[in-house]
Every structure is written in structure tokens, then in C-alpha cells.
Amino acid sequence: MPAILQPYELLNTSIPLLDVRSEGEYVRGHIPGANNLPLFTDEERAVVGTLYNQIGKDEAFEKGLEIVGPKMAQMVRKARKIAGINKDIALYCWRGGMRSQSVGWLLETAGFNVFLLEGGYKAYRRMVLELFEQPLPLYVLGGYTGSGKTEILYEIKKQGGQIIDLEALAHHKGSAFGALGQPEQPSSEMFENELHRQLMTMNLNQPIWIEDESRNMGKVYLPQQLYRCIQQSPLFFIERSLEQRVDYLMQHYGIYPADELEKAIHKIKKRLGDEMYRYILNLLYSGKLKEVCINLLNYYDRAYKRLTAQRNQELVQFIPIADHYTNQHIAKILLDYESH
Image (cartoon, rainbow, N blue to C red; front, side, top):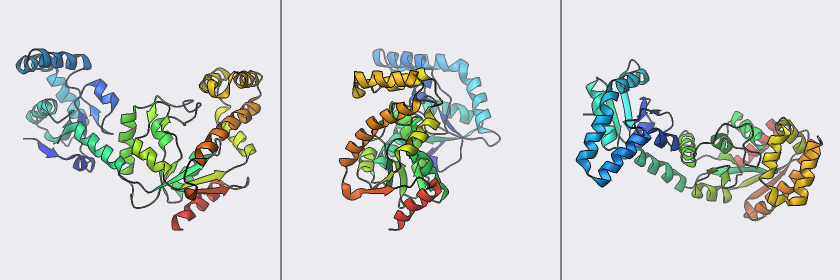
């Protein structure tokens, strides 16, 4: 009989992990590090599910056998490649039911040492969401657009601080320009799974530095409770000069073609207003990128200032940054607040 693992036990092992759900279920969200070895394709799963609901369990079971039979040898070969010399293998389906039990029987018959996830992916997801319900010791790094917050965040890490880069997990920089140069975004569910994985490696009794973000980054949404925690945590607002921020934006976004920048600007057309939108596009296609940056920063600064004013001001610390300060210097200033 396959051994049974609880979700927290599974995450503390190095056993190769198989997700035996369909490709669509896997793409929507899976346990980080799991390999997809689907018992049914999306289409086959729909056929079996329809039979189960409309005719009965026996008919659905027989159809499932008919579908899976020709696949068995190939599934065993794939599992052997994943497991390697050590034949330990763990697997899960949605609720730890027939799919994982069936594949578990097959692999055990083929000589594997099989471990099944109790409660399946559903139990794992319950554990993920429970973590986000807990208050986290967040220190929030804020600052106007172009302040270089991400680079400062990684300098904090170099100097021993704990950080989470939400933008890297979401494959999005947060603004209308956030998708430029980024790979395809994960689902919000997969974002949560990856975020949970990182949090589980951290000391949750020590500060965790995180950038100030809105509820969504592109199509990815932060868990509601995590977003609330960010809003209620200490905010360290770095104040850099307009000149430095324009230079930063020119360096990071001026490399993209005008038509890609136009698509990004179009996302905030209604907020800019028709007249300002046309004015900025004229600057863009005249090659006046610095002026484009300045005008866009006027918009973003007003929006961010309004949002910052809505926070509990007792939790907001404004930190003026001289132009000659390096990121190393800024990170040291911020980390000093951990001991206050």
C-alpha cells in the first residue's frame, strides 16, 4: 500500500512529485516543483465526468479504463525518468481520490515506492491560504515610480535581510508598463503557491521586506488578507529626486520601441485625459522620451501620493535620499530600522 503524506510533510521531502491531474488543471495551479503526469487529458476528463454525472459510476469507471489502458507503459517510463535511480515517487490529484490511487497502484506494481498526498491538491491549497490568513511581519518599501525599489530590495537581501519580490513572482512590474520585457504571467493561484513556497523558507518572526504594491499586478491578484497586511504594515517611503527617477526610467524603459510604449500608455488613457494622452504620444513619436517620463511621473506621483495619504501616517516613515547615496547605503539605512 502506498504511504500517506500530509501536505506539510510533502513540502519537507525531496521526493520527486507527480501531479496526475489534467494539463489544464496543472497550468491553473500546482505544487511548485511537481511534474505533470496526467491520467486524463482535459478532453478525456470531461468525457469521464459527463458519464459519471449523467449515467453512473460504473460506466465512467469502464470508460476511464478504456482511456488509460494504452497509456500505462508510457506513464511508467515517464515516472522512471523523473524518479531516477531511487524509485521513491510522490503523487497527488485533486482530492486524493481515484486518479492518484489508480496511478499509485500502477507505479507500485511497477516497483516504485509510492507516497500519496492526503487530501490531494485541495488540502495543499487549504494550507497555502491558511498561511495568508496569518499576520506577517512585513516591512513595506515604498517610493514614487522610478525610485529603484526592486534594486534596493535585493541589496537588503545581500545585507542579510529577508525579502519577497512580488513583481518577480507575478512577472509584472506593477504599472501600466509592468508587462514590458516580462514572461507570461502565472495564474493568481500559481502566484499564491510560489509565494507560499518562499514564505515557508523564512523566519516568520523576523521582518520580511516587500515592495508596496496595489491589489493587482497585471492579471495577478494578491490574496486579500496579504494585501490588507501590506496596507497595515510599516511603510518606508524613500524620496529620490525627479532627475534620478527620470534617469532610471530612461534606462529601464527607454529601450523599448515606441509602439510598445504607446500600448502601455493607452492603458491609462482615460486617467490621463484625451488632451494629455495625445500630448504624451506626440512627445513619444518626436523622440522626446525624457519629457514623456516627466509627464507620466506627474500622473503616477499624484496617484501614489493620494494612496499613501490614506494609510495610517503613524506607520509611514519618509526617508530623503541624496543623489549620491548608493543602493548599498540606502539598504543599510532601511535595515537599521529593524533594530529600532
